[in-house]
Length: 601
Image (tube, rainbow, N blue to C red):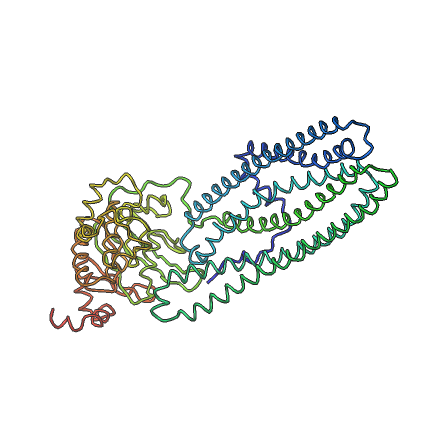
């Protein structure tokens, strides 16, 4: 199986093209983004004010030797405190509004992106899902989109706040005392060196985390879906061991980032403490010598403490940005993978009545392997009932997949009413053909929903009438809530036969012109099979029907039987004719019903 290779991608530290594409999602919210940036600048400016207010308070009203009288000092201090509190309040309100706006924008972008990805996945051909595990696709819709949200809310925008704050502090430090400012900047090369090492360590761990999360999701999805098989075959210990390996890999990947953070922030603290010590030594000497005021020194220390915080934050924000680059590449690679099965520019209207179905020299292979069907040609007339039989792997299911255009033929044509099915819109084709599969998929919801599938144009009377006609109402009425009864995930609260009857009702309610039954009665019990057979007689009346079955008793009364072997048509005729020939069909029949044959013939 060919899995997603994009978990191995190593994104560039910054990719302008990818970032431009990410920012396009902000286009619909540019007003909110502009307001958020304005609030961010306001917040940055007001964060610079408190240390300077402390300087004024100390130099004018607190330091000994001030020429201002005691009463005036208290009044001045009261004003400074009032301004200080006002600045903090404005900074708080600006920060609150900015964080709320960007969080809102981030959630809206996530919503838009998830909708775009899901819409794209709905248009993808079935072959795409054959090659890509569901768990990894889920990772694209959840984890990767969440990483981009983190970039919008606490990454890219927060970088602007850190940069503005850093530049503002540098300007103020140089304004207060250029000599002390240069002393403060001495440790910057060491800080940037530590940040670079930290960035590389975390970048590697983030890449491992993304890869292992996708593997864990894929394993969990597959294992939980197949839990009944795991339990029946007592594979719990083996599966637990496999999950342990995946989980341990994820644990160690996270541990790598924890170790990186564990040493990086203490290093930042030590370097900033060294810088503060230098400021105290040289600045204290300047105060003693009268070169600067005591208030300036206090303000300088406060600015210096604030100076190193954005530097450490920038390194972390850079990693968020880098992680977002990798997630964006994965998402955009998914979105850029165009569906291979597409509608024509000008679709041909599909016939309104049952029309002739023609397979004209059709050949097909899955994923470029050996051909599953080879040079298949046959015709099904309007209203005719045709069965297709053969050993497992002979190509029966492939034929109906090609007819429904879940896959496109590689050679030959499939015609409906003389028109190639590739000329029809897919939605029209799928409405024209109803397929009932052996493995019935039911959605988590009630019984009624699993018949009409959310199509509100189907009235309740029509829904109940179809269920009654198809013999499904007998068991539905016995359910505690009737049509409103919840069926659980994949219909786990219903028996195989009940799920099968619901699938017949689901197909009939859309009034298809072509009915395809793929092993539709092979898993039902004898009593339910009687109900299904009775329903099928009504169901197939007046409709072009193609029936694929292992249980040959279900197809005795069809108009014609096509026998496949290794992807080729080897026999064709009625049930009686094929038995008389003594060929492959006769052998199949005898293998299944040799005991019953003595009683019937």
